[in-house]
Image (cartoon, rainbow, N blue to C red; front, side, top):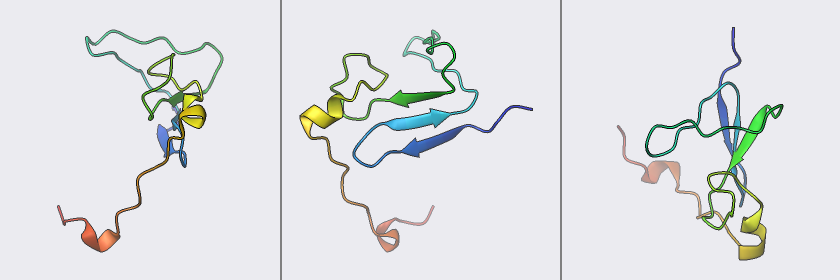
Length: 77
């Protein structure tokens, strides 16, 4: 049995993906992960030179999360 995939939004940073997941590009081709690393960090700021992976460029560019939306402001599905 494989571990569930977990995606964690890091405050003012990347998306941390943990678990057995396949990452595909816009043409459906597999984007290879770094061998031996159980996690991958995906860029949210758009400045990484290693897209789609994070290279910590968000720190130099001052990336800040948008404010949280209050729960009562989100429409019901």
